[in-house]
Image (cartoon, helix red, strand yellow):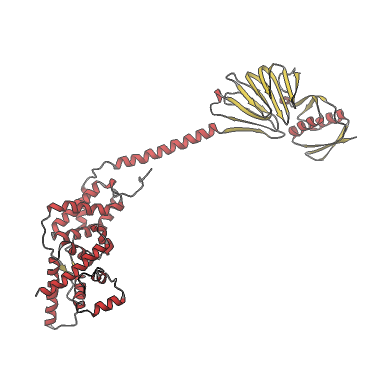
Length: 302
Length: 173
């Protein structure tokens, strides 16, 4: 055996790592017998026993001097507390900052209070979106459809629609934004209406109606919008417009199979009696109607 | 939020299990080094006391190198080196029990003594590595880990130990 052997073949052999041919070579050498004996006998050596139990007992008697145990525990606690606070915070923000949406389906009305106790009545087929967060200083809501507002005193109150904007200070008013028709009626106080480039101030009893850029001023004599008392009021409306309104109020589908329907209607139609409403329309336009299904109505020429 | 969940050795069950896995081999290592059993026992106790006291700062996976480092450092000055006195297992009486030739038995006994003597005479590094393998049955990689050297260095020490032992046994008449 080469003393300078860099492969440390003896160590490899002792650890049973030699290849078969290396092992065969080694076994053939003169020294093998002695090494084999060293290997065997050294495997039967032992050291005097060590009293583990007693030593462990001695060790555990010592106090843990390092007080870091408590900070670690406290850190845990702080982490959990922080998580809880963040979770609560997110929930709070989500509840208040995220938009609140109120609906009235076709055939329904929905009355609700805003955070400042302002009263809103949503007419059928309408929707309002607003944020609870910071409501008292930022009274701003989005309206699709028609709603009546009885606004509590406070800062500027703004109703945005896709057609125009209504700004008020403590008042009662109605806003209707449907298709290309934008109607605002003021029942109490003052209302500022913005429609495209024009700005109009309404006081109680005044109403304004915009349709395709045309403005129409109307005087209203009622205290509240008629729809709150289950009536639809029309002032020189087309049959199509009236049919739309009936569809929303009664949640029905109306088909008009008539040509001569250009006359304008002024009057009131009930929202709680479909047959009466249909009869009024039929008589006015000299038509007849039939109901092929419960929620389907067809007007035709007589 | 980092590292707070890592296991440290503060839990008594974790600590005790770790102690039972490591204490004997640390004690043996110190004994192979200095030959002084009582000192080795004390050093083990000291090293584990330090670990227990600083448990919160030592994650379980670092605990082993921690105790070996402590034991090594604190032993540098204190220990008076003694001869490493080993013994054979109590129920061990040679390998070839069929051969009852008195001369053969005597020769075997002589070899046993020569081997003990030769191991005593090995230099410290070779003896420690060799005995960790032979008595504690450790893999070279484990020995390398505990001595903080490479596996190659362990192989070298073992290889040299075997060469030395064989030479000594020849010389001891």
